[in-house]
Image (cartoon, rainbow, N blue to C red; front, side, top):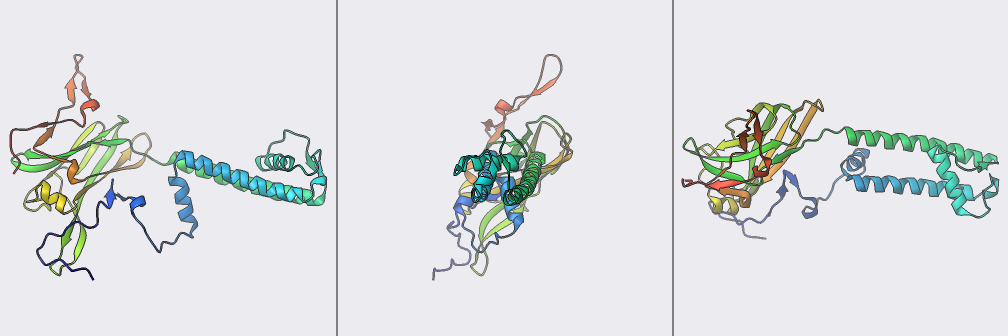
Length: 306
């Protein structure tokens, strides 16, 4: 058995980066014992698949269903009017017409067997098209956020207190009502019993809510004695495998629904002794503007962060 770390020792990170943007990286995470038999999991997989993969899956399902019914029609191909005997392609095209509810040829069933198969395929076609239409509507109607976070977070003195800062911007430019930010830090700790844990602490923010989030929002966490980050420098953050996790939510005025955005920062994305450059300016006509081209830029301060 591996030797347990002694109490008070700083454990060597052995879990690695297990989170990114607040979610587990599937390609680096192996989960055993999951129940994948429920339809809800299949429905979730369909909703979260990329559009390219979704279209490919629909096309594959459409082709497979038509191929199966073409085989059924082939068992009595002579009873399909104007179909070439033994020609599977004619059976497949006839199946496509029945399943899709269209008719662009003079092929038609001539026997009771062919009629029964055609009726069964018509029912399957109604169900298939209904399911696809419902899934398409669900995918298109899901509320999405277009919130961009600064590529780095900074730790810089603010009002005499070292403060963790990062920026968020609404790329749509519309209003997000009652926006709320929740920031947590995940880090490895060792209990007094010598147990190594990956613990999550919520960080207290200077302002955790914004009644109207339209352009830019600088989110700040003062690193006081009550903060889990107190006394940690860049090396200590790296040794504890630290990660800052952000969840931002609000009600989009256009979509009239709640939207969510998430992001994360690891120690290599935290810059010490820098501040964000000002992206707001006043135009000659008196209007204010924001330059998102400089949204991620920082500048170094002369003041040393304690």
